Image (cartoon, rainbow, N blue to C red; front, side, top):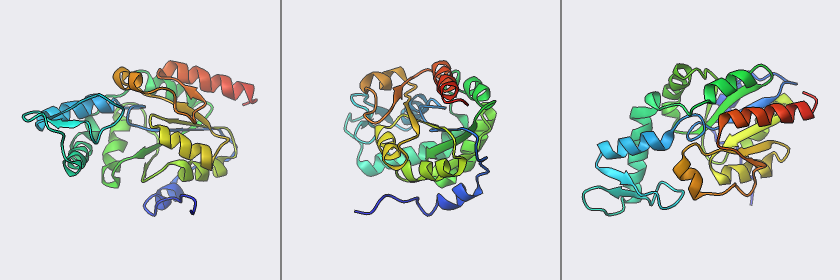
Length: 224
């Protein structure tokens, strides 16, 4: 089986990034790391006759029709998710402390947002980030995140930190770029209670002030 590669739609976005060699890098997911995705998605579902049954750490398979209590078909669930990103991306609520922590970390590290979302929603997410005080470059990724993280780590040749809420993204990064420090972060307390630390993360931290302290301590211990 061939190793995962960077999706064709992601390559030009990575090529357009301006990354400084020799400067540490923080690569962060957006949903449930920088923005309260679940909170916004639940409101969108309610407005569209559905709700999320939080019985497990998953979206597809947990969306139910509010009138019938029946599980939404996979295609309906995907349509609802696409509609949410299309209509609500710009108005998502930031995770408390995220902007302040990244501002502090920016004094000694670069920041890139690596988020799996439709490329058509990339502009809306850029606006949301700017409005939330997080005007960092964003890459709209498709598929596993390891290859894109490997690409960026090869450019900066300095300590790299990766934050994400999805366990399989930590596995992907561990396989593609094992030297990258992986922080499992889940902002919504209800989701956080449903899942333990990702198998391939180095740290599980769900608070941005603690993340800032962790990264600063790690950089100091490495002489940065």
